[in-house]
Image (tube, rainbow, N blue to C red; front, side):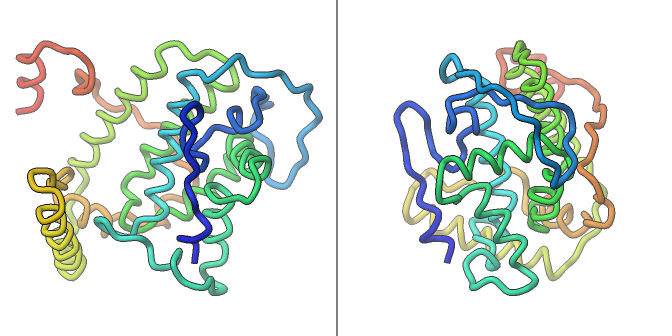
Length: 262
């Protein structure tokens, strides 16, 4: 059903509509006034035009891409079934939030939904955290850390070193994912392995030499998903400190990288 609704309109200047910042959609700066309670009205704030398309807007768009895939994917290359069926009483909240974040009919509605997420941790939890699929639940801490970082940046209007910090967060959460305790679910592992093998075969046929989907491994994501419980994530997680290590995505001496990857 939502496959038809979610048309991703492209713009050479702005990017993909579904993932745009509310600042790009409205051409005005967000004014974050601290954490607003869910359902509370925001006091009127004079609109201030944005100075242009800033790097923070691209980083926010990447955040929304991450959220989109964590909500919409139920396995390797597998769209979540609940988003392709007529909503039931159980799936209506999921469909409602997903549509509001990525397929709202007007730019104003899309911008307002995203503004509400940045305004309120409670809205972020209801819209994002509780709708992440079991398959991608291990990535909730990554979403939470990006959310906190971007929210602080927009609140203070300080965007220095934002790109480098996000790269560091990704590296740390990748390491944390690999270190999750293994609680194997044989049925889930078999199912996920089958999905990945089918997708790899499709890619080898359609895109020779470009069919690798081996990061992270079958076992890591399957067992991590099986061991991640919503009961253990009642709130948007606070960023947790992780041992620092050189970023694999920045220019670093090759020997240093190799010594940390062994």
